[in-house]
Image 1 (cartoon, rainbow, N blue to C red):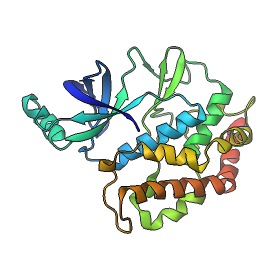
Image 2: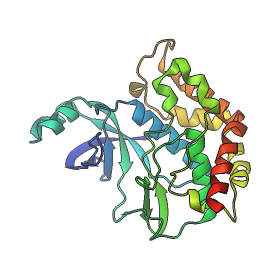
Image 3: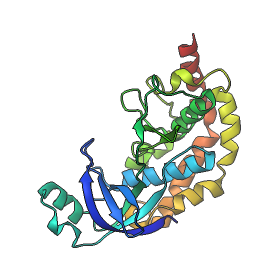
Length: 262
């Protein structure tokens, strides 16, 4: 389970993207980038964030601490911006708080050193989760305390937008051609050595632990599923199937890395 905090003050919005996250303070005296369940992208984005962050933690990949950030019903009444008022009113209850990293810089492959081991492991992780949003245009990496940190995984696990066709996710190739770290995922550690190191860490217990952190309120009713727990098990099933079918998406990943090296 994620730690729970209660939001106490809205500091400022982040205008990037369409979900309008906000910098907020909480009753634990921490500051968080809050992603709201009432945003237009819906709670599935938050589900993907939590699941992917949980998997990344098991794999030893750095991600910010996440919390379940509770928002009171009356919170938005004093906000001057009508758009923010509407968003806060629609987000009463549990939202996602991402630990604010003061002083963090946007990642640039030209400005910061990239370790090939790290690059290949991030590439493998993004291929597993089918994260389509770590490109050179939008790296979704921060540079903090002289180390890279992975952020923003809401665009991953796209199978949950069409559960009827989710079975195709297991063997779906990963489009790695514009991945921000593709050119560094070679040399010391290849895709195969990353696979050998990481895949054994994600057994069903690890997958279930990651899924257990998702609040019930974000697992909205779906046709064919009787409960939030049924949906958690469906995520475990899909990720387990993709792990078993790694040959189907590792082969094109190898080709992408080889193409850059050539």
